[in-house]
Length: 141
Image 1 (cartoon, rainbow, N blue to C red):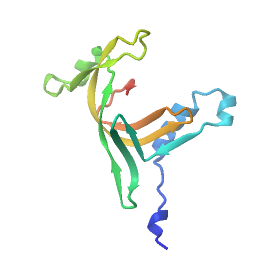
Image 2: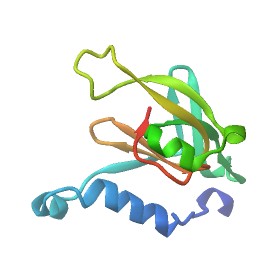
Image 3: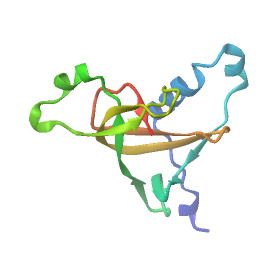
């Protein structure tokens, strides 16, 4: 029997703590006792693109895609984080808080390593990334 098929991979402790902080802690005590169903995905396809975060791709080596994340950083923080030579690219992204869906905000494109892909029972998909930017407030997909 080929044992490589049954390789177990440990999930990084800090990733587990982040998942608990973001998915379990915000719930009320009763819902915490009931728990939540989360599914770890090694691959996710959306709009014709495939993203991978796999600790043992094809039972061989890890595969963690690099992505560009549109981070919403307040303009007051731009000068604190970057100098003129290292300014990142900016894009307009739909403002998800807007009622009419026609508002846009400016976000910075920052490279990040895709660490983990999580799907809830509702079908909503989240990603945990290791960003090249230290300050982050809100992730926009």
